Length: 574
Image (cartoon, rainbow, N blue to C red; front, side):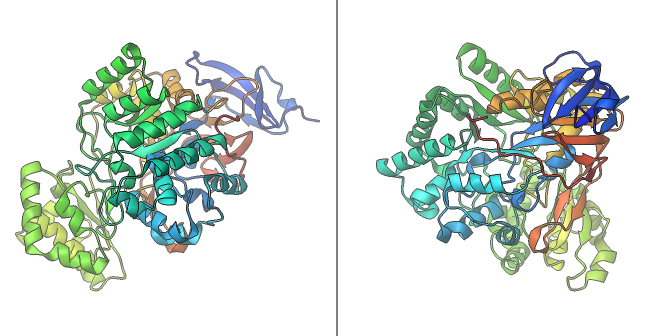
């Protein structure tokens, strides 16, 4: 009878702890790594030949929005395809618990625009068998999972539950209401929440807005409210907060809570910031992070955007232009209302002024002339004619051919295609020297995955694979040992995910086996795999021989085994 469930033979072990790589066998039994060294193949019920392969801990993805998707996609793809074995949900203050039954649609509306998760998909795919945060975690616990899941206690649902989202935007909360929300935060952490999350951007430069174009409720928090939540978390003596907003706000939160803060986001100079205008150069941000951690005794981690940025989008649902008022106003409403507004010459004149003054589409760095008409839906009027005329051409080519301003060429195609026109942006490439600086920052955590969010626009959940393939193999910005530490053990430590993110005897067997010469992201494609017939933009991976979660293989050479060994990880109890 076999001693072990799985034996991985002859691989090169990189343990996630910055230990120099070494060749060894790895034996797994009962969901844990039980032996690293020389193991006879005859002792394994299953044996994997890992010769020429890297054997490493699964990646820990701290910044995801799989709060709804996990109910219809157990493997939380894209993350599950790219070697991620543990995800953290409830980021940016957004989520679905606690939530009264009558407020469910309002909660989904916020996420439909803010994080661009299709509303019809959420309505069809979520069980809504909870009211409280504890009941939500119980629901997550029950549902089959192909990855491990831990959750922040997001603050927006607390406002919705105690005050009501729209009421809380009109009037600041009373002391009694704030105390009740703090009690709910503490209750949420006691049942397994790893801390709290919030987006605190305000209105200027904010592209993460509510369904009606107003700031999210957490964007409007006062210092009094932020302080109260920080002190509530600090009273437990554990936990971490995630915040999207100014670095100095993160510093304030660290001081008031006495706990670590994960700040979003550290960007290389020139990178597109999908969360609004970049306030600091990356060199300035890195210096300030060092001051906070080394001199001021404040623990502030930085989520670093470590993927080159490209997207596909339609103007039917696009929200990442919300930082520019004229674009925000034009892209809110029904499709019919948007078509009228986008055809309006007065609005277009203002759009052209911004375009000329700031450069690029939405003033955000996209060279409009290089954006390509990637596809036009076959079910729009004049589809064949529009496809023959425009598909495959750039906006610059169309504008020149038709003698139009680029804004007119862009919007004329979109309106003619009833906004069901897919535009593809060029890849915004971060210089390797800049990426090396931000990825190797003292407290940098690679990622800003946003897995489960902006589902029709971006594929940044490929970040771990891109780190291995592009930044380490091609540009050599760090060693593989350093990369695996930053992709696994370091984020696990930052979030308080105990026992995860590294390989050692006795720890849960979250393991990846991959070919360091071929691991890579595959081209972007559209997948019609969401509930209610919705599609999303995805990138799969190649080069991963195996992805193993709690000792069970979930993917072999990119093919899902349908195993669901993932667990709900309750902070403070693991």
